[in-house]
Structure formats: C-alpha cells, structure tokens
Amino acid sequence: MIATDRFVFLHLHKAGGSFVNDCLRRFVPDAREIGYHLPRELIPKRYQLLPVLGLVRNPWSYYVSWYAFQARRPQPNALFRILSDGGRLPFAATVRNLLELGSEDTLLEPLLAALPSGYGNRGLNLPAFALAPIRGSGRGFYSFLHDYLYGAGGPTHAGRMESVRTDLLRMLAAVDQPVGASMRLFILDAPPRNVSEHGAYRDYYDDSLRELVAQKDATLIARYEYRFDD
Image (cartoon, rainbow, N blue to C red):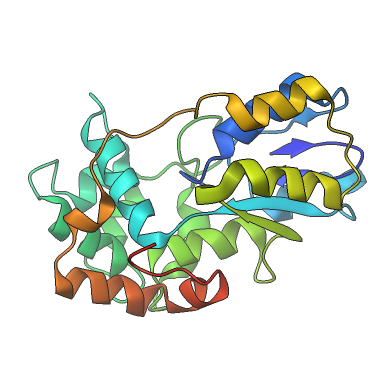
C-alpha cells in the first residue's frame, strides 16, 4: 500500500504492483509505504476518503504466474505447498485445488492452519482469518483476492497489468498527480519488476481447466472484459 495526499495505491498480488510501488516511491515526494499487500480496510484514517488506484490481471495469466513463481522458490509459501502436495502436483492439479478452495474444505482446513495469524511484511501476506471467508463462496481464488484487497466496489481507478504503462499515466491524471519528464520516462521505459519466468499462459491450460477459471472467476472476467486469448 502506497498512500499519498492525492490517492492510495493498493497492490494486488502478481498484477504489476511492484513496478508501480517503485515508481511512486521514486517520484512522488509525499508517497508513504504502509505495509505490503494490505487491503482497503486497513487504509489509515487520514487517507480513507482518497481515491484508490489499483491494477488487475487476466485471471488465466495470474494462475500461471503464481504457480511458476512459487514452483521456482527454494521455500514456497504455505498456499503453494499445501495445494501442490509439497510440489508433487503439476500445474493443472495445483491450480484446480486453488480454484476449488471456495467450494470444499478438504484443503482449506489444513491451509488455514498453516497460514499466519496476523499480517507480516512480505509475500502474499494473507493471514488465516483473511482467507477464511472464502469458505463456501464458490469463487475463484483470484476473484476472492481482488474483492478482499479492494472491497466489493473495486478500486476507484483500475488499470490492467497488460497495459500498466498507459493505464498508470491515465490513473495518475485522473487524481491530478503531476507527472514530470523523469517520471513519465520511467513509466514508459523502465523494465518490469518481480517477473515470473514462464511460457505463454495459454499453453498451460486444457479445455477443462480453462473453463473452470471462466466459471470461478466469471464476475471479475466480465467486469474487466478479459478473454482467454487476450
């Protein structure tokens, strides 16, 4: 979370937020970093009436990025360890488990037991009590994460990770944030941050898993007009 006198930027997991955080810390003098991956409900009182900026990502792409990033880590997080059976399950089985967290409790219970009881300052930063409301929702993990972070109304000004450079400039203009020449150059030319290494996300899906994402994340997909072949 980055708070300024004009807006608050909330960092949705694996959606280009590291790039935006870096940009704001470099070029916005009053930018203040407040925690990591913290949700809208934890915005400090003095900033709560400000517009919220946020990014989203194609859900099919998100699940590939999440899996690829965690699979390469020497010590993956609890979410990946439990849903992948300690790294033994391949992409499709692991992501299917992630998508079904809101529909059945077989894996949710051990996952909640393994998650921290409070917020920290690294990783997904999703305590057990924050994930628990997914129980019985039937929703995809990424849709749940979106609403948990931004609230049901979503960000005041939303951009897509796939067009983060132009969308960030548009969002900053919408909140009257000055963008100098150096900041504009950074937004347009600086390399991405914290990128997962993987192939084209479409290649990871069979028809069944592709349709399961379409079903579980249907509301988010419709809201941001995503398609599998974007």
